[in-house]
Length: 255
Ligand SMILES: Nc1ncnc2c1ncn2[C@@H]1O[C@H](COP(=O)(O)OP(=O)(O)OP(=O)(O)O)[C@@H](O)[C@H]1O
Ligand SMILES: [Mg+2]
Image (cartoon, rainbow, N blue to C red; front, side, top):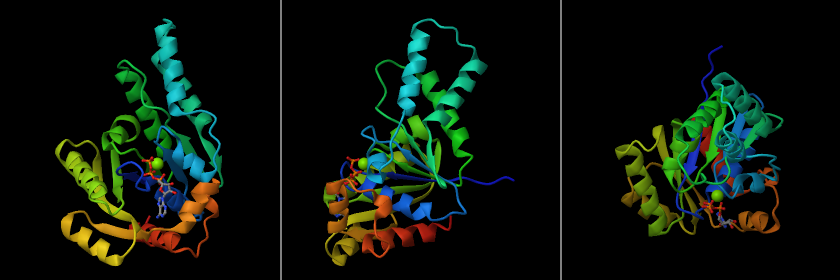
């Protein structure tokens, strides 16, 4: 069977709510028992795993560092053996429950150029992703990180922004970077506005950006409370407005 994996990547300025929205999306997707979901935490601070209460044994960067250390020690690098080892290590780094797998990328790269190692790892992440129906990536602000460290192409590139001009500017910049430099290849692009106080803010922003606004979340005490107490977003109530918005956005993607 040739099933096609759909990839969703969230990016945007620091602190605008990428992880909160990603965590609500994972909660939503986890209910789709007909789909296998891979959630990738591409934030060095492992925010998504924390928001979902997931314990991570090992990150992709830990695997990368082990390989680099063995290269530095001059240990022999038979290509097939290395690929098999990386494959095994990546599978071992995957935390799974029910229909959802979690993978954390880890810290940004250590010094020195190990492009071959990065590219090997990216290939292996892509191979792993083929076993899933939907891959969701909680990214960093720099969209090029997604291309360099996680995926070559995404189906949905989603900018998250608060209502500030700074947040919206970063979304616009990412759009131009993605288009001009092909920093990441994408098929669909959209924007989610977060911490909105009043629908007029959405209308005003809509006039100033050429990115399709998929939906918006209000300033929400429940999100604050979940973060404050470190509660898992998997337990976020289905009846909450923020969750319903995310549900509608996912439904519209027809995954
Ligand atoms: N709609 C909201 N209402 C209230 N607080 C929110 C909302 N969205 C996010 N927050 C709060 O804002 C903070 C940053 O959110 P979050 O971690 O999701 O952002 P981020 O974009 O992932 O940040 P980073 O760039 O550091 O990864 C958190 O403390 C979170 O609780
Ligand atoms: Mg985050």
